[in-house]
Length: 215
Ligand SMILES: [Zn+2]
Ligand SMILES: [Zn+2]
Image 1 (cartoon, rainbow, N blue to C red):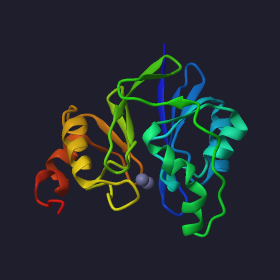
Image 2 (cartoon, protein in one colour; image 1 turned 180 degrees about the horizontal axis):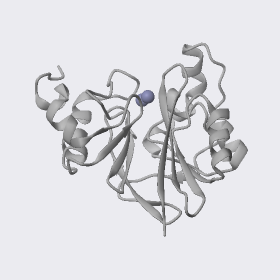
Image 3 (cartoon, rainbow, N blue to C red; image 1 turned 90 degrees about the horizontal axis):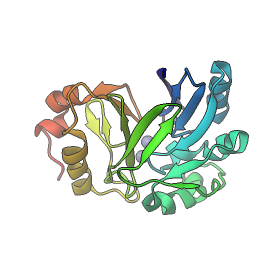
Image 4 (cartoon, rainbow, N blue to C red; image 1 turned 180 degrees about the vertical axis):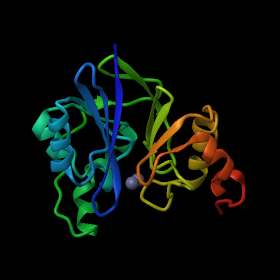
């Protein structure tokens, strides 16, 4: 018997959502996008008694990977990233200096993510979806009626495409082919802001209803 538990940990100056996804029956968790407050993420794991099995990255923007080095250092959990976001990942010190932070490049990812790959936590399985546009190597994790979509789709908005590696047409194509084909009931856990559902966004998100078009 598995038991799925999701813990959202909004944190840091970018108010980024780090997620713990656990099979609490097995006492195992993965961490999606360890942003700024690594100490807090580790404390949360410890207080729940979960062993960290892996670090899954939706993409390698600074706000989503600032805590990777510290969490990996404390847990030795393998780091999983799509190779197309590796240049962003390796450039963390440069992006850090833009926001006045002295940051080191995290250890190289041990797992190369690819579309269709199946990942597990305890007895639970998630599928990797390739969802580029916000960044070249953005991926989402789909399973159990939910999708962890990084910065692709937000409650009432969509991901920026003016950041390094962003592309607006690619993002719109990703939204059409990878997100809007999911059932309305699918819960969307975004990289920022509250959770939502595909149905709510399909019907009310101005970027998806056609009320607003990217130029
Ligand atoms: Zn981002
Ligand atoms: Zn972000």
